[in-house]
Structures are given as structure tokens and as C-alpha cells.
Image (tube, rainbow over all chains, first blue to last red; front, side, top):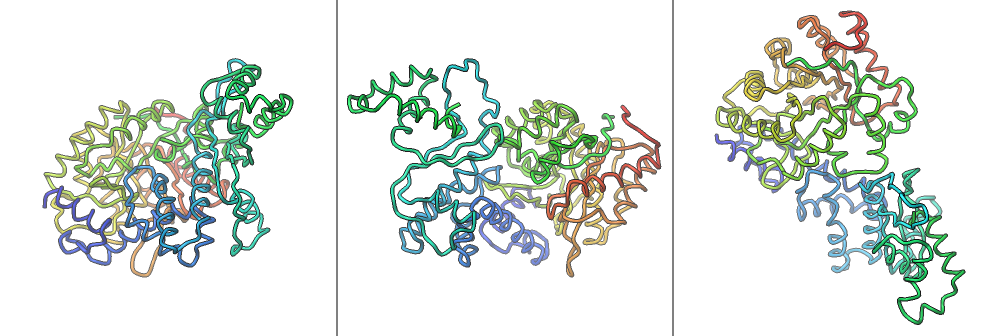
Length: 243
Length: 280
């Protein structure tokens, strides 16, 4: 047998669930063992990444995760990357009416939390000028239609039943990694905070420069009290969104 | 082919991060799963960077798919090269298996096809990888649950020829040999005797799980008595200490329990060779 044929037979067996055991010259039950191993690695990674969704969707979780495996076979060497399409998959189920709408945002939240926690951005970001404000690159802002943050916190602290649903209210949420403790911090932001963060994403600025940039955006923003603006900057620093 | 004897090491696992950072009497060396650190930062990276300041670290991968005809993923090789050089690994290693094909990754170790044609392709691939990474490379024997009737070359002969032709080292997993012995009725001592000992740079020792129908290489149990006996027997036979790593991936014990397992290996080495800190 040629190596290319051998590999193709294994691929069909593992990714398309075809029983090629005879062609491979191995017992069928042993091929099943490998099929189970590969599928279990995949489902295990999903469970690790989406523990709250697993809890909410149980007992349908295993069936959904098998469907996801078939739609999005693992293509990347990094096991966790196989979860990147999960929000799209969930959206498909929501569109079909199989799942409630808020699950899409829960999936985005759980995915974001993991990738912020493991972000390769420097954990010891070099601050060469302490007067300047830097954006913490290990952070992500979500604009949600549901109060996912509060709901997740209540679920994690067992203050809310699994059957409960998050309130439908537009809100802005940030997840940030504290680069000293490496823990993720969740913060509720307002629209002013988002503008400040966007300005700092474009360039490193001193406080005065940031304020000047903020007021130069449009006339409406000029009405915003400067002391309150400084308070928001301090809040963003406290939440480790700004370094 | 001699490499520095690193002593007795343990695998770095996330559940032990705090213990590792607090430990004042660290193991002699550490092994990491390469894929867990190629694209991931944060605490994981901080821990291995901290450990690397004090102890050697070897990067042990799952994704090179040495037994596959598939070309190595260039992005993976770039990241692996950076990791191996950043940590100044004395060597890096991967398994003699197929871990992906046709753009898919299996995250598992599919047994290789052992024919003259596949050997030639595996040699080309390993030579390419070694040349690219520019560090000594070790090939590990795997545990497998299926022996294809299409194989035409004996497993030990295949590994020896592959190591010889590519000037690679061998990472000898004694538990894998023992699991294969149980599942395929092999002669474990005959297998170990025929491995080219001059190229063996490292051992893996781990536990397995005995099901009714088959033995699974879980890395989730203590090393069994029979594997300890084979370890001691092999060391006596080759008459030199070999860097040894305790692997434990599932149902992780406490950090101290893992270190106690490593101490068993240390006592065997000390019994045979005395107190050895470093042998070149």
C-alpha cells in the first residue's frame, strides 16, 4: 500500500466516519477506538471553552457538538482554534429556532474570555514613558443586546438557576487580562469609555493629549465635563483596560 | 550522539502552575507540550519563561505528523523554531505517527505505515524539519491499538533506520512499549534490546488503563511495577543514566504526588549509578 492511500483511508475514517478498517488492514473495533479518540478530543475542547453553554444546552450538548464537528472539522494544529466557528454554528441554530437568541452572545463571551486569558500579547508590556496611556492589547469590547456579563457572574456564583435567562438590554462589556495577576476582569463600559479606548487604540497618548483628541471629535462631545472625563480615564486604568 | 544527561524531569501542566512557581526544589528539568505554548501567552508563557531561567526545558510536540506524506505546516514550524530557541531547548521531540492529513488535524497519534516507500518519505520530512529548526531532534515510539497488515518493516527496525538516516535521537517511551506488549503480545525486552541505545536520549514513563478488551495509554495513572522493572533493566543493560521524564496528562495528581513519582526514578538511577548531577 502507498502512504498516500493509507493516509486517505484514515482521513475518511476519522473525518467522514467511513469504516475503512478492511482496506487499512486493521480490526474494525480498533478503528472505532481511534474514531472515538479523535471525536472526544474535539468535544472535550468545546466543553473546556464553553462550559456555561454546555450547562445551558445540556442534555442536547453532545448532539450539537457532534454536528459542529461534522460541519467544522479540525484544521489547525492548535486544538482551541477549532472553536472559532462555534458562534456561527450557534447562530445557525438560533436562526432555525432551535436555540434562544442570547446563546450567540454567550458563545462570543466565552470565546472572548478564553482568548483574552491566553492572549500572546506581552504580559510585561514595556512602558517606556509612564506619563503615556497605552491600551492593554489583552482586552476586548463587546456590544451586547443581553446583559450577559451580570448573568454569567450570577451563574458562576450560583446565584441564578441554569434555566434563567439574561435580561434583554443593550450594554457594552469589556474583558481585560490583568497582566500582573493574569486574571480576566469584566467591566461595564459606556459610550464615552469606548471612544477613549478607540482613540488609544490608534496611538499612545498622554492624558492631556487624549482629552484634547476627545474634544476634537465633534461639538457634542465638547459639552462633556472634563472632570467626568478624567474620572472615566481613571476608571479605565483601574479596570486595566488602559495601562 | 551523546547529549547532556538532564536528570529526572516532569511534564509542565496548567493545574500545577502555582506549585511550580512556588517550588524551591524544582525537578531537574521539564518537558512542555509544544502546541500549548506556540500561540498562547499570559500565565502559561510566564510560567515556562520563569522555569526556563532555572532549568532545561524540552519541547515535545504532537503535530509534526512525522509518518505522514503531508508537508510540515510552515506556520507551525516557524512558531516551533521560535519556541525551541527562545527556551534554548537542548532538543525537541515528536511522535512517529500520523497526526493529521488532508488539511485535518486529529490531535491523536495514528499508527504509521511501515513500508520502504513510507520510510523514504519520513526520512525526507524529518531531514527537512531538522534542517529548519536547527536543534537536535528526538523521535518517540508510540503506543498503538492497530497493527496494519500492510506493514512490511518491523517497528524497531523502522525507528532505528529512521533515526540513523536522519541522524536523530530516540525518545524511548517504555510505557508505550509495555502497552504494545500487552495489546499485541510483543516481547517488550526484545523490543527494547533492539532499539539503537546509542541514540536514546530520553525516556518517557507514564501510566496506562486496563480495560476489559484493551489497554489504553491514558497517562492518567502511576507508572506500573512492570514498567519500573523494564526501566531499571534497560538502564542496567545500557549502563548509563538517561534523561527521564514522568508524563501525566489526565486525572492529574497533586504536584507533590507527581514529584514523588519522579523520586522513584531518581532512586533507581542512584542505585545503579550513584548520585549523578550531570554527565556530558
